[in-house]
Image (tube, rainbow, N blue to C red; front, side, top):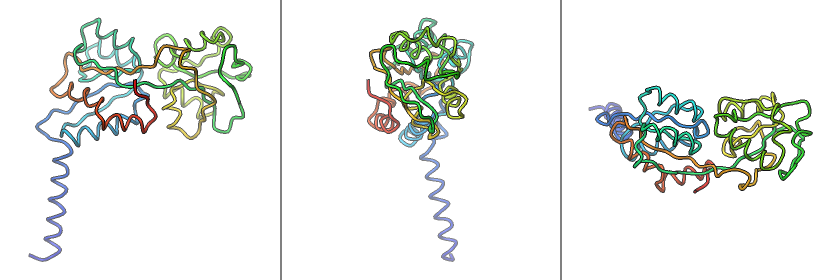
Length: 256
């Protein structure tokens, strides 16, 4: 057999074996609905999980509120990964998740952000002049009525005594990545997002971080749904593995 042909066959064999290790067709692909703030980190964790187990994971990202309601409406989902406890509690109360599989996975910090070229300087504290810093502009964050980051933001600003000053100047985004986009495009002079989201976009900078005691702890719980395919609970457990913890840390998420 000519040398080039032997090399070609060897390369094909390597590709076939590599794909076999990447995803085992005998194992059903999992579908995980997850909070928008987990977009980047979960793609890496999903790849690591597939490499280790042979089971592929597909993700759909959005506001925890939106995806919880989609699950309530009958969406066939295997794993729910929320940005707060409230929406996980919402599904658990309706018997839509496997309570035994539920795990609190990681935490985060709340950040005040501005466009990268902004000259705004603020030190967050009681009564800090956020209204004056906004000028004639608006503050972008998640909708405080149902989006977790917006709830944390309202709680923090209320604790610090400045919520009433800017409540009618809030851009109520439908998820944290949309809020980030308003600031990165310069459409809002300030925004409140998670620290990890601020790290993903070089067009914004962190003005300051909110004191941890100004709002409830930011907790990300995950659970398999009651309709989950085999392997869903294994994936939830993998989220707490040493491999996953290293990836979470690389993206700036905090251990609980």
